[in-house]
Length: 81
Image (cartoon, rainbow, N blue to C red; front, side, top):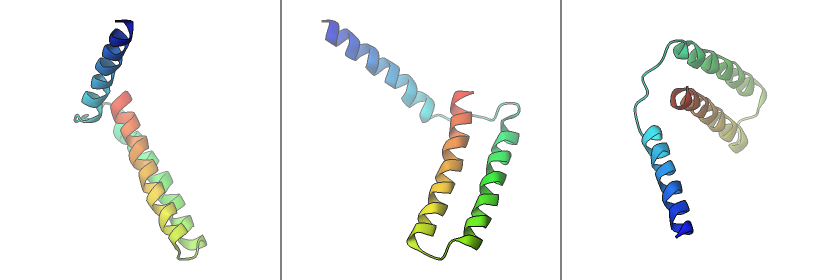
């Protein structure tokens, strides 16, 4: 029974996460400025990578992962503030 209760608790806690992650989060005060700061910093790095790294699979991956970093940082703000 204890295992079932723990599993039930975990399932309910995860449902809260699912609801949060798959819901619209309207921007709260100050968040748009944070999003813009993150995008601007990433854009600066993207231009530096564009100038410094030879065209390659690695450069493409670096750019893709930079985009992902911006996305996840913004999602972290939207979902958790």
